[in-house]
Every structure is written in C-alpha cells, then in structure tokens.
Length: 416
Image 1 (cartoon, rainbow, N blue to C red):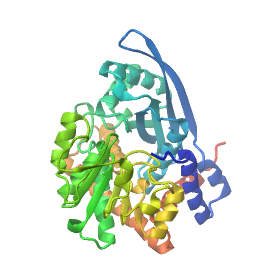
Image 2 (tube, one colour):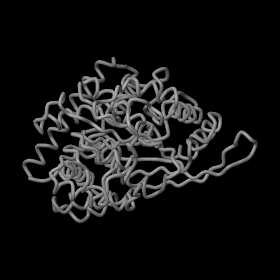
Image 3 (spheres, helix red, strand yellow):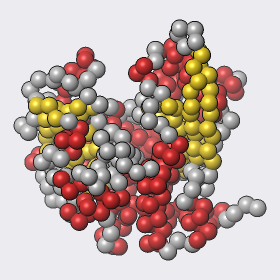
Image 4 (cartoon, one colour):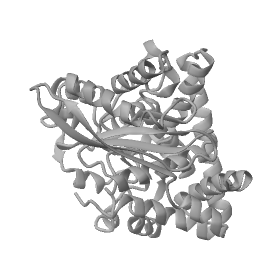
C-alpha cells in the first residue's frame, strides 16, 4: 500500500488552502499552523517473561483556544510524531465544525497491541497514562479510544489517573465502559455518524439509498459499524476489507453473517459467498459510495484516477492526499471529508464528558437523536459553505473550522 507523504505536511497543506482562501491574519496563521504542545515519552514496561521493554509514546495538543483539548489514543506499529501532530490538528477542525467546546489533541504508542497479552497491555497503558498524566485531565485534555485501543484501555487509563488523584475522575477519558461512567451509543458513534452523512450525501446527489452500493475499507470499529448501520438503512454493502484483504459480492454481503464470521475467526479471510479482493482493489470497485475507514494515505495520485465511486465518505482520518483530492474534484467525485464524516465519535465523547461532569446520564435514544441532529446540521452548514463559495467539501469544511478557531484566537489575543 502506498504510504504517501508526511501526514503533518498534508494537514498543513489542507490548512493553508483555507487560510489562503480566508486571507487569514498572518499572526493567526502562524499560531494555527503548528501544534501548541508535544510530549514525547520513552517508558519501561514489565513483560510476562520477566523482561523490561522500552516503548515510545506521544501526546500532542494542537490548540486549546476553544476549551480543553480532546482526541484519541492510538496503539499501532506505525505511530509517529508527524502522524500524531496531524491527527491533533484534524481534531481541532473537527471540534470546531461541530461547535464542540474543545481544541484538538491526539496520542499514541508505537506498539502492535495484537502481540501483547492482556496483562502486558494493561501494564503498558497504566505506565503510559502515568507518563502523560502531567498534561491530561477532565478540564485540560481528555483522551478517547482510537486505532488499537478500546473501552478497556480507557478503563485502565481512567483508573490510573484516578489512583494518582486519590478520587474517581470519570471525565478524564471518554469511550469508557458504561459501568464506570461511559455513555450509551459511544461504541458505534463514529460509524453511526458515517451512516448519517452518507445518507445526506446520497440525498444531495439525488440517489435513492436503496439503489446505492457501498464498499468499506477497514472493518474495525468504524468500518464494521458503518457497514452494519448502512445495511440496516437498506443500502447494499458489496465489499469490506481488513488487514488480511477484502471480500466482494456485487449482489450484496450479508453484514450480520460477516460480523459473526469475523468474531469467530478474527479475520475476513476465508469468508464464503464472496470473492477475494485486495485492499487496493476494493478502493477501485464500481460502487456508488466508497468509505475508506482504515488508515491515512490510502487514496493517492497513484490510484485516484481509477476510483469509480461517485461519493467518498472518509471514515478514517487523512485517507486522501491533496494530490488525490485534486484528481477526485476534477472527476466530479463528491468527497465528504474526515473532519465532517467521522466526527460522530468525538460528538458522543462530548456527550459522555458532559454527562460525567453533571453525574446525569441520558438514554441511548436521546444520544442518537442528538447525534443525528448535530451531524445533519453540520453537514448542511458545510454544504451551504461549499455552494455559496463554489468550493469543494473539504475546503468548505476547513473554511468553517479555521474561521471558528481563528475568531477564538483573536478574541483571546496573545498572552502576555
């Protein structure tokens, strides 16, 4: 798979397009173009065989002018500082588009979590939490799950931080189990958001969802929930993939069967009633909607011209390079950018944070109703900006986001 450019360079180039369009004040441009704070840690972990292994981790805060920072923790072998900086910047714009009172942050550890035992993962998580505890907190920086982490990871982080504080601090992280202050609807929130904006994009494109076909790259939390929820809405999901490759059936996949198979086998490989395709091939299938829900730099100038989808909904962060964006725009592909498409997770994380602070919890129906309203309103706001300025959806989203954060920066001024 093509790795593409430095993700932080990509993030800065996307910002520059909006800053140029807005004729942004040079001072604000200087501040917003870089991250505000970087914490890099190298920390030891006790392994099951009695050895000590050193791991590298990061926590990056891009901007905190609109409130405490918010963003996930990623466990993956490819985690790097440029990637985490890019993800933190994207979180700032995402929060701004959705009017959430947060700045952007992100964290990560260079590790393959599949190669560690549960005990080793707990040791790693607790030590990493201790290392970054100097900058995280319910009123300063709130982590959440991301690639390679889950509700159990957040439970360990919350408990570790609470032990340091000497009291229970549930609002320090989101994406926790319900039993310790998690929110209803959080686990499927990002996928539900992808489903909502996909239906909005189909409506805008005057395509009946019952006639649409979808391919989903990545079958983790985001991809699997996106596929399941789209199928429940009557959209035909014809292809999905994971790290082992993909499966394709132009007549449509039975997503509940696919989910059961992956739960039993841990992979899509070997699933019957479908033909095998590679991740690269999946991106180029003749479908109505393509949902890249894996990692960064999947759609590049190497393959963008061969994309056949009419609509791309970015479930992952940064799946499309700027060069590919230009090609897709020339082809007339309607791209719903990551900062809009996959913000369901951080939106329900915001709901969880509010519920924890108030010690008052909402029902799943209330959560989903609020999420639907916010996702639709944000899509409409970005679409209106696109049409009134005659720009593509990504630039429209960035215009909304950068203007919002720049206004906050201007209002607060520079200290001292």
